[in-house]
Length: 362
Image 1 (cartoon, helix red, strand yellow):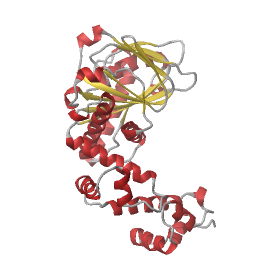
Image 2 (tube, one colour; image 1 turned 90 degrees about the vertical axis):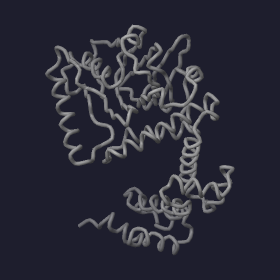
Image 3 (cartoon, helix red, strand yellow; image 1 turned 90 degrees about the horizontal axis):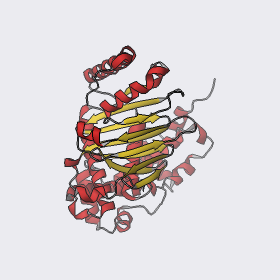
Image 4 (cartoon, one colour; image 1 turned 180 degrees about the vertical axis):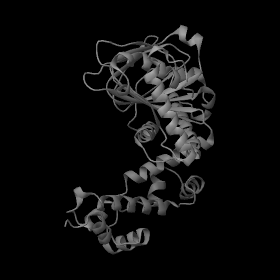
């Protein structure tokens, strides 16, 4: 994903941005670690008069060329963070009110032939294609294409809107393009099923500032491709065209999500998980063997419960809540079992860990 295009008369400021970005990237590459999404653009680093032109230039590089209508009388605010994950491009953006258009002229000039999947994080937006127009709000997903004209309107009363956009080559999505086109520019809520998994993945990816290795990006690219394929297939009723490996992996992610949502249920076990997903216990164990790197279903449940109790024990807002109440919240209903499991996992008792997390004030 090149960001070294001609930067015009506002070049000096944007050139400093580019040099800062490339310098940070070079340092993290030498260290072998970096954050997944890297800061590319922040309007606060430019004079107000230069921001709109800079935004047009940087989005053409990091995303695709669009025509913009932006009120220059207002102080334009926007930011962009991006990552190229083995051909899948992920971009987290914030922006003020604007209208953007992907026109036939721009498509003829340059078309990378990608699907674009967007998740709205904040603000109300409208996307239109042909005669279809959809109003999108936080939590909604939408798909469109770099090969088709569209219009997007953003109306923000205060602050900025925010979204995450994934651009994925059409050849990486093994679904009939004519059927995918039918759901383009349609509002798809991201609060259930595969959409919830996809929205959660994108939200965490945009928010996470932890360190990643280059190989992590390649693995996450595969996960994201599988999720997008399964999400599209679900909505165009094309599961039969989705690779078996993709369907199995998405099912595995759905099962993990189910477990995380039911950790407080004392009856949660491999048997109840398998029953809830209408699969055999043998199939459940096979899914974990294939995708969980040796972690069994029971150990995954136990590790997730311990991780939640450890987090709550360290939370100052829960300092007055008894440890046994925290343990019960996450499925440990026998204090002795909880203490033994916690010490076996973390090397200290729950009370000692809480004391370390909340040392007495001098």
